[in-house]
Image 1 (cartoon, one colour):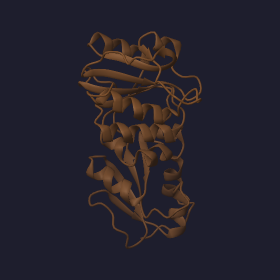
Image 2 (cartoon, rainbow, N blue to C red; image 1 turned 120 degrees about the vertical axis):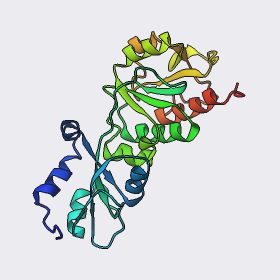
Image 3 (cartoon, one colour; image 1 turned 180 degrees about the horizontal axis):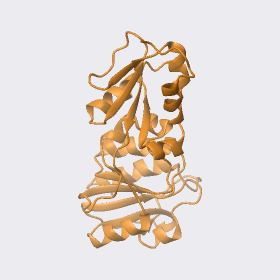
Image 4 (tube, rainbow, N blue to C red; image 1 turned 90 degrees about the horizontal axis):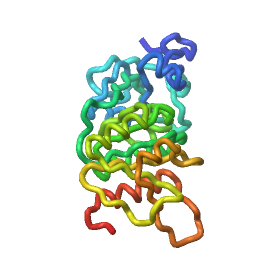
Length: 247
């Protein structure tokens, strides 16, 4: 049976997942678009229900709910047609008892979901070990953040916790914590296989408490711009920190 009413209770419940509070309350999130739905499924995401127009290809396994094009339009947050949407169980983002070796990217109060998604995608591409988010960083499972990440949200660990506490734990475990800071040293701190890159809020940078736990670094710039977009800075720094031959 096809759902054709936008006021159907199941459809209204799906639309509610566009709201952060509802995602937190239910432990669920909405995935939009054929590519992202299939990629999330292939990466092990737990899809509960897939909503799609009749005749559209969907992953095998999750419950399929057939809907009209009008209903699909009411579910999607994008104007362009995306084919399918899925409701997925949000993975456990608790901080681990032991962090893996490698580069961990920590985000301090980042507020732009596009920046967050781009950083996730870059970290995935460059081989970071995981992403650590402060509790007041934007939701990585918001529709815009998921779109910007292009599936990378499901490719590497995403942890959420009290950033100062977790940085303290990481330092005790032998990690070198480096943060971007306008008053930092222009010489990249010595670092090894265990490194944390901290990227601060788009407007105010890293908080004072977080900065005290890090070695501040100012990326040298030849032009007149005082600072860079958070996602651009993160990408340049990840490349530096993961390239053993970089100056």
